[in-house]
Image (cartoon, rainbow, N blue to C red; front, side, top):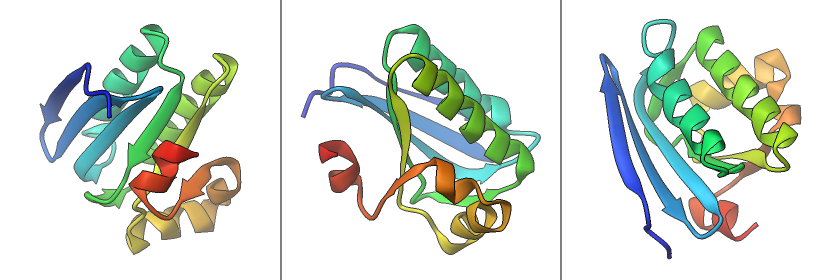
Length: 122
């Protein structure tokens, strides 16, 4: 596994870890993704895309909450990644986050993987 870059950002109730593995940028938000913390996730996602990392794997296994603002961050990243020739891959969806995707129909526009290992190999 390539661990060429690593970092983290923390804003209030959300900690975001970022690392590079192969051709993927793995972004792991931990905590609550909402109006107050959305920038803590959107900033590293935008930075990855600006650096040419268009295959974004978002490991949601530590994400405890996601509201509509958080969902908009994910949808925006997906559009930007696809415009750059990549995509957003979600993994580790907890029931509360999976439910937000299901209710809104957003699950249909993301590639969802059952494990991080599968997200990185796919």
